[in-house]
Length: 524
Ligand SMILES: [Zn+2]
Image: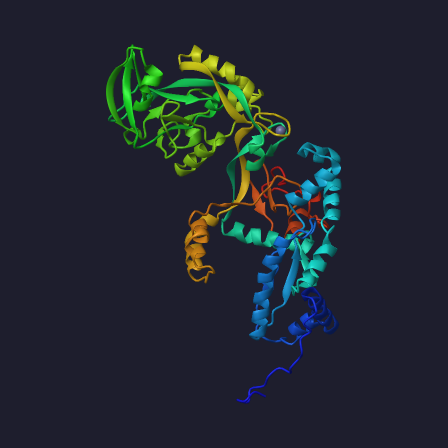
């Protein structure tokens, strides 16, 4: 007892020669002996719960020092809440899926491309992935105990387990029912030979200096406005003529000055800053000048006739205003192919242009591109330029020496390419996310409206699909007629397909067909 009567812990002398690690081992031994963690949970039975699930690490790699810090935080709060009287069952977990696992197995098997996996067999490949995911489980369990992290590793959740996969299907079905799950496009650097998108890190490894065409194209105005007349020609520049068949619109800077200049019988439209470079010494006459903003909505005829304006929606083949246009190279009017550029894609989304991608996954044109169908797009460049020349649509063609990204694996020039991907429409919940953030107490406080708040404000829809092998399969079945169903449980799948899955992974799930509700082709 202290002088004021409060109880004091019994005095224990401290061994001043014992090393800290030794002392820690002694404490851990006592915790083991008395099963202290389990007991601390048992003593709170019936108390109000405070729920904690471990954000699961991947056990196909060794734990490192950086895992310790996060686990200290994951330990402090459950202990604190337990001390406050809550029942805190800490559910451990293991992330068993994903690219990290696949890449480790690919390296082990000496694979360099997705086609290697297809040849080897998806079932066999996924079996190898499954075998590999707990390689370092013992190391993890040792680390967990050694750092005194209290978490239930006896009964963890594992992302490869059927009931976990089914819970993800349940969540996706809820999103589907709220119309928050949709298929959209994303422009990615893409190797058509390997059939894979490359990360920015991979792209950076493959730049090569190459000669590409540098082409100036005339786009004839079909519907003018106060400053532009029908028959005027908008000049655009590109080093990828193969994308001109997919021209959807052109972009100008609203604040930049543009001019109409007469050159012989023609009136050309370019940025004022580009006139001398493009038309210097050609006996041109300035007709009028205006801002880019005044060009908005002007309509023009597409450089190639393969895809109609209507396919892109009401704003197809019109002048749009953008924030990425400059007159430093080119003409100040930017050819926009929504499926083949990141800026193009963003602008297209802003203006509601439909994404039309006439290039197959193997990098060849599809049947929509008439005489060019079946050709590798980069090989079509020269013929497309001649095509423009023969129709009087070419202003100038040169060669342009520049640095262009190539695949680091196989040397193929990369295409910026719109690939379909499934998204969760998180941007539609932005206001609620921001409101919820206001109720969060952040340490340090500047994160709240800084890094995290900014991230929420600029939130873009979450791309959840990967065209890979070892992961939770997306529970969407559909057919060519557009009939689509999202499945929320194994029981629902069995009811609709008659198939009871024992393993929901690929390739088994790929074989499950659901009969069409209207008697059409089956949904897959
Ligand atoms: Zn490649």
